[in-house]
Length: 564
Image 1 (cartoon, one colour):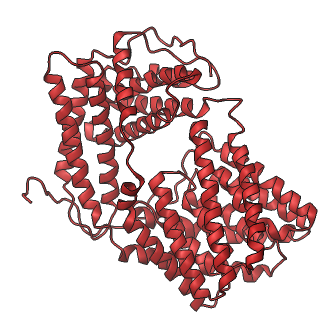
Image 2 (cartoon, rainbow, N blue to C red):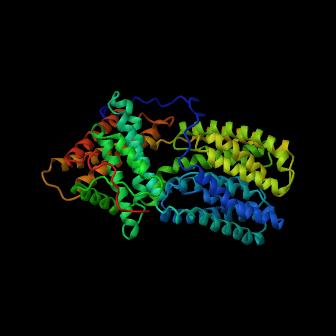
């Protein structure tokens, strides 16, 4: 390949830094929703088992209850489907684990099955973009179940408990729908508007390259908003709300393309108006609105990428997960630890989009788990005063984990670790010192072995995907440029091309960032990436000017006559 297209500028080995790994972020806007949902889903089954004197069965009900942690950012129609699939996936993994546990007690075989399950769960969760907590909860349940003595006759009853708790978790996840049926899509739209406002406010205060992260964050928020809105029905009573929100997302997208013509305060005012259940702000009724919505219709008509094509690029991550989890479990067994699934789950929790992010997660996991072990030492005497206190302590830690984990992963792990240790005592109290030692050793072993596996299993396809992303961005830009050169256009054509280019540039930035965090890969075409981004964003700005769309047009923050 010629130097014009294969410029290096990226070292094959990158430095792993500790800077910022443990830094706390602002909490998520809806941090309390997963936290409250978790408690609401876990508490009734556990308290019922406590009343019946069968707290030893809590592991099976928690398998279903923990499904309530998922899909809080999705519209309710999409959330219903996602939660149903999560419950089915959880029960499927649990079923494989229980059957395996009933057929063999060979620890090596159990660790191997657990590692393969973890790899499948990782690949499916990433391919379907199910969102946090991803595969970790699924792997925790299935891995723990592998090491619980089981008989074939007990399996139907245990799966029934998990299914019943899963149905309850589904109801908990859908409970806010009658109160705020449009809450998720309004929130996603507000986040897109705020991100665009932040970029527009910063634009012009320095070199354009200085604001590239803010621009990338803005486009990512806009793309997330589109994914949320496109999951909504196109007809019926909810379609009017969807179309009103679409116009606001278009305004955010236009602001990113033409920040100099944008009033950031107006975008923030629109975002603020989306809080609560008030009317949706209007952007102004002009003929361009029709063109914008025709562009949305064109995007709706695009066929989704098949699952098998999304799984292909994830093969290296799946291989890392399988190898790392297996080796971590084997190492734990070699050390004589009684619960090798702790090391296995630690390894499974590490693997992120690239090696640099995996390193950061490894540091966060070790720090959080070791701090959590110390917290367990402080809590255990209280929890051992009675099973009721044991359950209440677990519920409090459950809430704390979900409330804190959006600040930083390690902070949530401080609560997750003692909660997991207390759950092991539902069937009977155990020596606190032994539990602490085993968990600390398994954490270090799992993190060390898991990260080494990530170093060994390289992702050499990352460079190829960057090339493909650059090519896709160039093609999208050329299509938009051709349309700009035409004197007359079909309705919605330019808007569809503009949005396609925006999506291509967002994908390019995400792909380039992911590849930049890998080791031992071939040099990335950095100059091509920069050139494609610059020319693409110039074309986006030209498209905005051609459509004569201004983010500050209209009459302030008038509202659509649309109620949620």
